[in-house]
Image 1 (tube, rainbow, N blue to C red):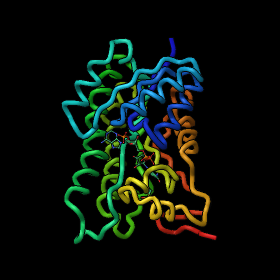
Image 2: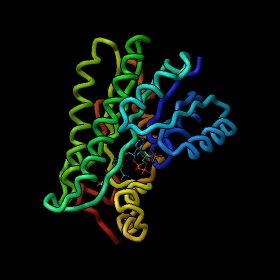
Image 3: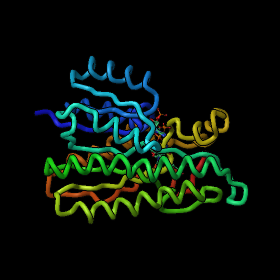
Image 4: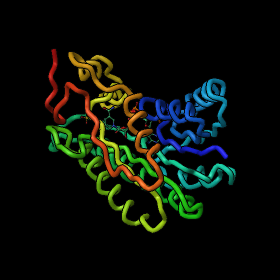
Amino acid sequence: MAKIALITGATAGIGEACAHLFAAQQYNLVLTGRRHDRLEKLAKDINEKYNVEVAVSAFDVRNRESVISNLESLPQHWKHIDVLINNAGLSQGLDPIQDGKYDDWDTMIDTNIKGLLYVSKVVSNWMIENGLGQIINLGSIAGKQVYANGNVYCATKAAVSSLSEGMRIDLLNHGIRVTAVHPGAVETEFSEVRFKGDKTRAKKVYEGFDPLVAKDIAETIWFAVSRPAHVNINEIIVMPTAQATATNIFRK
Ligand code: NDP
Ligand code: 8X3
C-alpha cells in the first residue's frame, strides 16, 4: 500500500515543493491550504506527472471547527497518514513591538501556533490508532535567534521548537517520530506575504546572495523521513551558505 503524506500550506513555496518531492517518491498526498484553485491545479499536475493519488482539502488552519470538520470528513482510507508536514505559516509585518499591529500578531499566533496545534491533534490521534507516523514541523532560524522587529514571528517559531519537543515526549510511547526543521532564508512567497504584496521590498530580502530554494527544504525533510524506522532526526537547522545567523548574511 502506498504511503500517505498530509501537507499543510501546499499551495506555495516549501509545501508545494514537498508535494512534488513526496509524489516523486510515490507517496499519495493530502494537500491543504486556503487557495482551493491552486490546490486543484497542483493535484491535477501531480497526478498526471507522478501517477499518485491526491486528495485536496481547503481550509484555514486558524479556524478550529473548519480544521476538524475538513480533516475528519476525509474518506477513512485517507486517514492512514504516514507523514504530517506542518508547514502552513507566515509572517506579517516587521515592526518594533511598540508599533506592532494587533491583527498581525493575531494572524501569526493563530496560524503558526494554534493552527499547527489544531492539525496536529487530529492527525496525531489517527497516527496513534494506526500505530505509526512522523510529524515534521516547520520552525525557523527565527525561532532560534531573535532579530530586530521580528518579535512576534520569532516567538511563534520558538513555540514551534518547544511544541516539537513536547510532541516528541508525549508521542514517544506511540512510536511517532517528530522532527523540527529550521530554515534560514528561503526564497518563496514568504516575504511578499510578510510585506503584504510589496514585491519590490520582498525581492530585496534575497538580493546579493544565493538564498535557499523551496526544494532544498523539501530534500531536507525527505532526509529525515527516509531514515530507518529506529532513527529520529530531532531537529535540523539549514541555512544558505551565505547566511551565518538570522541577521548575518554576506551579500556581494
Ligand atoms: P509561502 O508564503 O510560500 O507559503 C506559505 C503556505 O502557508 C501557503 O501555502 C499558504 O497557503 C499557507 N498558509 C498561510 N496561512 C494559512 C492559513 N491561515 N491556513 C492555511 N494555510 C495557510 O511561504 P514558505 O513556503 O516560505 O513558508 C512555509 C513555512 O516555512 C512557514 O511556516 C514559514 O514560517 C516557514 N519558514 C520559511 C522560511 C523562508 O525564508 N521562506 C524560513 C524559515 C521558515 P494559502 O495562502 O493558500 O492558505
Ligand atoms: C523565515 C526566515 O529570517 O525571514 O522564517 O525570519 S526569517
